[in-house]
Each structure stands twice: as structure tokens, then as C-alpha cells.
Length: 144
Image 1 (cartoon, helix red, strand yellow):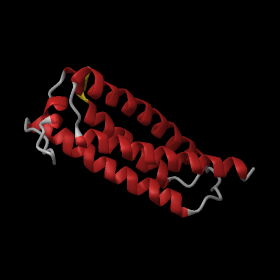
Image 2 (cartoon, rainbow, N blue to C red):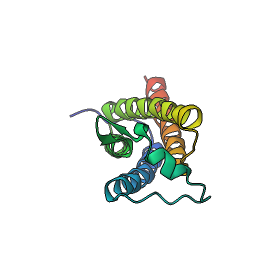
Image 3 (cartoon, rainbow, N blue to C red):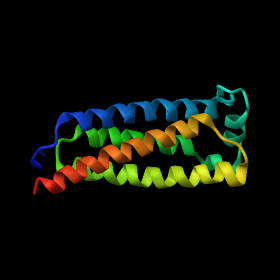
Image 4 (cartoon, rainbow, N blue to C red):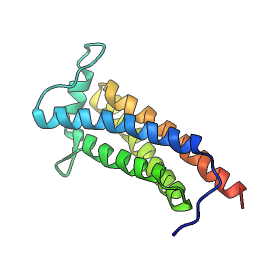
């Protein structure tokens, strides 16, 4: 069994809450994809529908939102672990997720020409998760 770390529960809880928020967003977008309904956009601009119906909304036939669900589930799992493995797993997932979100946001702005509010919210959640995970990793290295 891996030894427990000295980091407090606050960052683990924050990471867990962010993961749940991301899971909700990803699940909603996955549901809209498979049901075939456009996602609700707050502004009514249609940007979400444009992004979700673009060729960039799937990778090898898998909806990008479903990949987000998998990533957020991994973050939730990492937050539940009280070990170095959990800290580094959370950092790795959130780093890759943030880089992928940045790429997707680039596509929205410069290629698709539309912004999806749900996608931007998910990107913000992933960046916040990266900050939490990085602080956890930093606290771990300072404890040594």
C-alpha cells in the first residue's frame, strides 16, 4: 500500500469538486451528441451547435465530450487517492487535459469560427484542476 501524503484534504476536495463539475459538463455534451439534440447555449448564438456538429467534435468516432468524461473520471479517482500516485496521476491528467482543451479552444476560435460555452467552461474547469494538482505536487516535493 502506498504511503499517505501530508497534503490537507482541501486541495483533494477542490479537485474532486472540479472533477464532478467537469463530469456533469462532459456527460451533458455526450448525451446531446448521442441523442442528436443541440446543446443549450445561454446566449442563443448557436456556437455550441456549430462546434458540436463540426468534424472536430469526434476523434476516431468517439465524441470529444466522452473523452472529457473519461478524463474527469480519472481526476475524480486521483482525488480519492491519498498517495503520491494520486497526486501525480491528477497532475498528469489535468496537464494533458489542459493542453488538449487549449488545442480545442484554438480550433474553435481559428478554424471553426464559433465558441461553445460548455466547452469553454470545461476548459476553465480543467485549468483550475491543473492549478490544484500542481499545488498538491508542489506541496509533496516541499515535504521531502
